[in-house]
Image 1 (cartoon, rainbow, N blue to C red):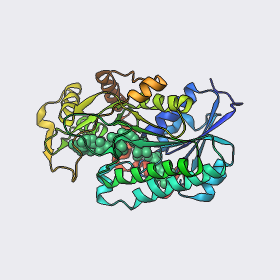
Image 2 (cartoon, rainbow, N blue to C red):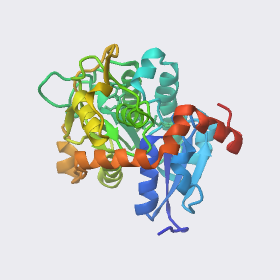
Image 3 (cartoon, rainbow, N blue to C red):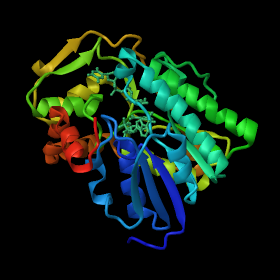
Length: 343
Ligand code: NAD
Ligand code: DAU
């Protein structure tokens, strides 16, 4: 259980978001040697409700702040942080198409500020949480390996690629101990209902149609968020500095397949499916070759997809107040009153 004399300190940025909050829950439950400091500036995607049970944990501290704020970052890092895991990002492709200023500010400049702070305080590992989208789009054959050339297609993926290149350069120039992970599409609890699976589940629960972009035949390689979080821990424990590790679920599905699975789980028919205008520049197919992390570090995804999807749908059924507060915007007002945070 909890251990007040934990000796190692981890900085998790973006820990009030989807993957970061799942990572913090897992870490507090399973990594008794580690204290966790979470730095998150609570954008629309950050939600303290995701960390509700962690806030009073003796090995956890939440700091509201921006990864692009040098004094704040330096102050935290000088408090004995050994490992930085940088989840903080603007993460939604559609929003980046509408305007990408915040994507450059957080994903690129924010990463630079964190890198400088981590270098100055000589952290033992800087782990950059990147994405398979940096590799661009695949045709019907083949998979992304760590050698696939970087060819991002959206403003979001371009900003993540810029960050990866900075991280790589800090290793080359300053011999900083860095690692980059590139994971495929995650699903699971606490995912903001603007992304495909939680948007569709919450729409269907509210008896609203689900908007499928284009012909619905774009392919994503889905992985349960806890499998991703365990892969991150494997990399912290066994990864080699200077390396890139792809992480994937070996689980390719078209958006139409996902939609039909959700309709089936929720007992709805195809009249709830609505084809809408395609996303501009929509990447056709992502598929990850994860053989490097599997053979070199011994990690493998564990969750069966249908089982993971059923559990995820059940989580949204059980936590209607969580997503309804987001859909109505009430979660922002609550935290404004509770924590004096202005949105
Ligand atoms: P998310 O949008 O749910 O969460 C992002 C978090 O970062 C939020 O809590 C937000 O408040 C915080 N944040 C944003 N700007 C910040 C800033 N300037 N300073 C401090 N905190 C800030 O994102 P997610 O889906 O959990 O993704 C986390 C990371 O994983 C991202 O880097 C993303 O690129 C990467 N990734 C996501 C997926 C996926 O399928 N969701 C797959 C591969 C990689
Ligand atoms: O591949 C990893 C990436 O996965 C992460 O880096 C991103 O942060 C994350 O948002 C995700 O990007 P995608 O664009 O793949 O995810 P999204 O959930 O937005 O869309 C998944 C697919 O579903 C994509 O082909 C677009 C489609 N889609 C999405 C939405 C929101 C629809 O058809 N309708 C929708 O309403």
